[in-house]
Image 1 (cartoon, rainbow, N blue to C red):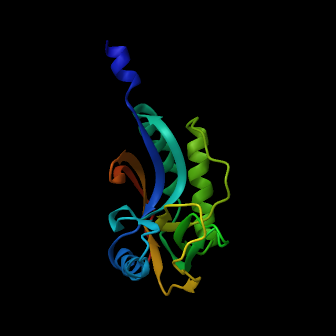
Image 2: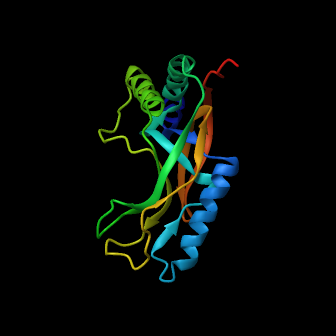
Length: 195
């Protein structure tokens, strides 16, 4: 009986950067402006509390793997100093006739790419599966409900906004009738730059 209970201690998880404070408020205002123009309700808009930047999607992991992964992640990121990365633009993805998402894109700076690589190394060292897709740093503001060309116009427009990267989180993702809900399970802080 105990063994059966232990096997079900799995949860859907990902490693990501939190988006909070002024940055989250600014993105929420941008999304609200688009939502107001979304008269046909083509987009399922993301709740601002769920804004994040995914660094590694892990699918279902065991609680023991989560603890082991965080030990590895903390060792990887303790050498990284905090940094700021700018958002490049707001727009559809993919940027073609049948997009799937409305995104706030981040610039792929060397620091962000290096942090992403460190996260992937920790995930692999933990023995967990890593998605084989190109790194596209972004915050998902909404997902298209259908696969047709949308009426809502979201031309790529610049965003005068930056994200302060001070820590990363291991998130738990739970789905219900309202969509996904993300909860922070563990955190790992980057080193503060000496002043």
